[in-house]
Length: 176
View (cartoon, rainbow, N blue to C red):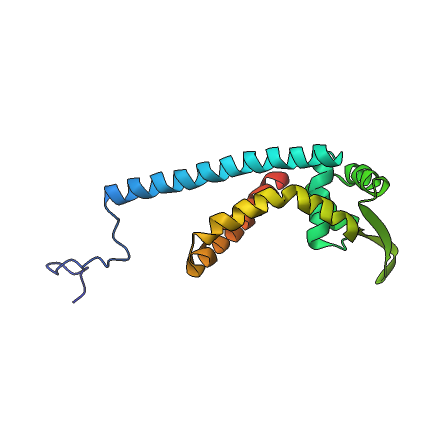
């Protein structure tokens, strides 16, 4: 029966469209706040660790960040690297000059475009960086060992989706 007709019984709300109880909403907000606080703490701790690693390697924070990006996404062109790092191309030139002088990276011709170059990490130097991060990597292995595979899949998905959301927020802010 059409519930818009006079005298018709109101349509039952489906479970999917009904609002959750206030206690559920409050609990969800508290849990979400804990996650956001945890991510903020993680960001600070990771930044502090990166700074210490950079100090040991005589690298500036931006240099270490770019070195990591080159290691993960390289060989990579300077324009793509500048975009990933959120740096002005002129600033990136200085970073690459320092990394190249320090023996961390090499610039090579792009085989697909003779006018362009690619930057790649010198493999022998990666071991130095890996050694300084080995304490965190061991600790992360210990943390992960306390979770089932299905939980690790969910955590990995959450982190990747959160990183994607952060990239979108960064791009939106840069465009405004």
